[in-house]
Amino acid sequence: MSAMRKTAMAGGVLYLVTFITSIPALALKDAARNNLDFMLGSGSATAVTWGAVLDVVLALAGVGAALALYPVTKRSSQVSGLGYVTSRLLEAAMIFVGCLTLFTMVTLRHDMAGATGAEAASLVTTGKSLIALHNWTFLLGPGLMAGVNGLFLGSVMYRSRLVPRLIPLMGLIGAPLLIASSFATMFGLWDQTSTIASVLTIPVFFWELSLGLWLTFKGFQPSPILDAEPAHALQAPATPVLAIPVPV
Image (cartoon, rainbow, N blue to C red; front, side, top):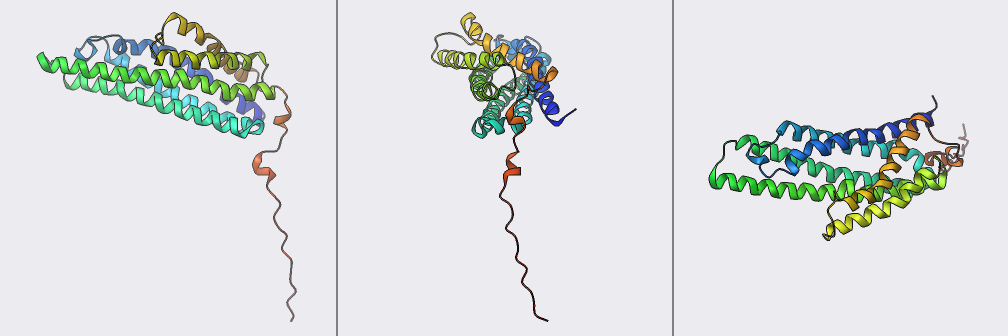
């Protein structure tokens, strides 16, 4: 297997890992996100913990995909390649903050089990605050930054023809829709999980899924950038050293 085939497969598999983790994570976290009594013992703390763990894997897989593809993307555009890595890092940072809110909720629920009266009311209020923070990280991370990711990587894949152009075209169409939807949610026009928001997410969903499948099972298509010399190979030659004879 060639080095480029391994690069494509690594990026594709990591993209698929983001799908394998994100969908069940969303369902598992629901025990806390949509349950006002979670802090008082209602719902499964184990499910929420596993949801947060899957989100950690999701964040790491996203960064890993960007790093795996960077040696190729930078040959097409170093700005877009670096921008894609940076946007993935920002997305991962936001996801990690969201995970911390969930882990904190599970810890407080365990440490304050059996709370009653004013203490219980305070615990519920704290849980609401943590969930509000988690929802914002969910909007800015897998929401807004997924659109930014699509713009950077989609532009590289479209110009270079490393994959069939229909695939990045879905990303280039879907990314602005997802970004617009995220801002609409920020200003209260609709909820991130509403029907209209879900519809606007569809193009990015299929862009990422099809990209992951294509890279995993097909690899890169022939492209001039695959034959380009890496940046480190284009360094200026060393200045020759003149030998100066030493009289005996």
